[in-house]
Image (cartoon, rainbow, N blue to C red):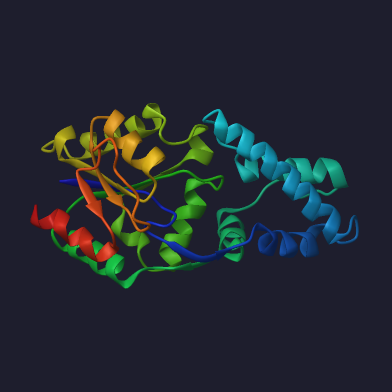
Length: 233
């Protein structure tokens, strides 16, 4: 068995999300002598609309690579890059994260059985920053590798994005096969359909009671506690 996990609302749940919490500190550190916070907040909202349009086309809009230079260009700042730690700080200001205790127990159980685990995430934040946040929450140790759409350029359900993870997972675990890979995620359109189209099983963390109208999920789970059903199957 090989497990590949989604990131947001799967490994980490957000009690609240507000991009402006991160943007406020960013403005205080680099731009408060160049514009008002309302100025930069309004520009952030404009860039968010660009992100939504790109997502409609299946493309990602990386925050550090593409958005950050635009703030500097517009307001004359010099902040054109972020370290992994800085990017992780920004992400954690925007999201009030928590780890479901059941998810922690499941990861511990899988590690105890030497099950290889990976992460494939739709995110405008780079993979290094995403992994840094997982490490801060004490669960990054479980994963052999993490891929972010910010680095790849396209978002799930893009088959090529899934294949990137599948290829590596099978190369690193030659005794396993594609049929033994399970993708665990909470989004039907991106996670369940994407996994199905890539020829791997999907475990849908169906927290909101959605309907699997196309019967694509191998496991339809209502909570992280039910993830242990995968190990018993």
